[in-house]
Length: 342
Figure 1 (tube, rainbow, N blue to C red):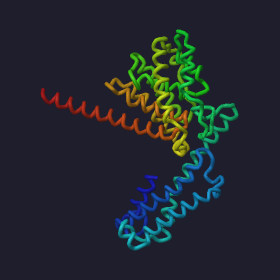
Figure 2: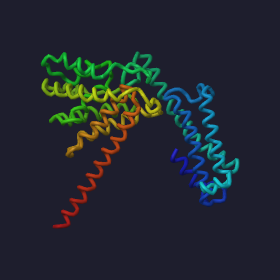
Figure 3: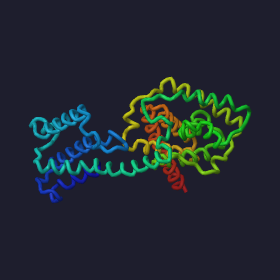
Figure 4: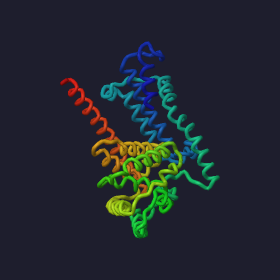
């Protein structure tokens, strides 16, 4: 979308690829129109993450009405004199509209091409009896699963003083999917970090997030599944988990489904989770707390179908990396001043 807009902007300037007046206002109008049309084409992509946009294309009359209204507003901005002055636009010819629409439609065609392997993977998974759903056996985003805190409390009640491996935890909560395992690994760092867990847990979260980002079922190497968590640490982990999740459940509810339905959102969630796992491994003071909460919000949002929590998780991930970059810049500046003293 951005590449197409910049391409049209460049091509519309004097001496570029399109024979036109070549002034800046004309180029800005072409780029602005391309960006608006790209957004309108992208609306069709958002209808499904797997099915073709052309399937049931004319069923949603409200959607077509909104698109028509958007085009009318865009036309008014370009052709109504006082709006031309307000938005610094100029009149476009039919050929100009054709160029903008052709470039903008690439958003639709590229997304259609990306859906082909997704549908193929879904068919293979269905043939094997599997599912591409990374979070739970429920595919409907409007179905609220049982409270997560109750599952954690049951696991805590059945410990009986035993230690468990990460593999045992995954098996005990298997129906929840790998998301619950990611959540459990992030919870200790949301409150008081448990010594010795940041590196193995960070590696595990990074690997599982990376698999989700690639559109594959999360997977861990065997040696991580064999890592044993002593009973005292495990009990503290589960108690903290029950307390944190119970507080979250007071505000968590299925909402903002369009966020998780947005094309590529599951891949983006995987990227954020993987980057959070990477931050957990960094030997920086106070670097665990914020990414751990980001992972917690992302995984809880996935399991409880809460798009708002997913959005908050992404924001916290960006803030976490911003703080890391800021710390690095401040540290580099401090070292530079220190070396200058000598």
